[in-house]
Length: 116
Image 1 (cartoon, rainbow, N blue to C red):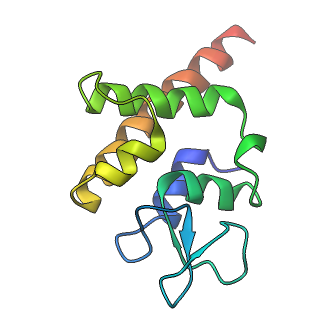
Image 2 (cartoon, helix red, strand yellow):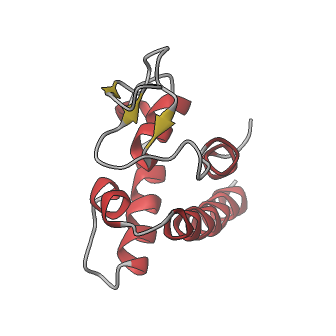
């Protein structure tokens, strides 16, 4: 199974990224991330979509890693994934978030592997 970071980086693009809601349809109207009409996603909406529309089904460790990345990139100003997404001035900021998140996820998976 692909890591969450790799799935996010493949799924979320500048073209299908949104702000202000978890997901949008082709008319740019807000919809649920698991809606068949959803075609644009914020970071949290993309995570939810990847997990079958259930954000709370994502293992807590991965949400904490994303929050850690948000906190670092915002200089300890933001801890919310949604707020970081909505304050981003461009997709480049989201891309940087996903890169840092991937680094943290890889470190966490390495720690887990070393404990086994």
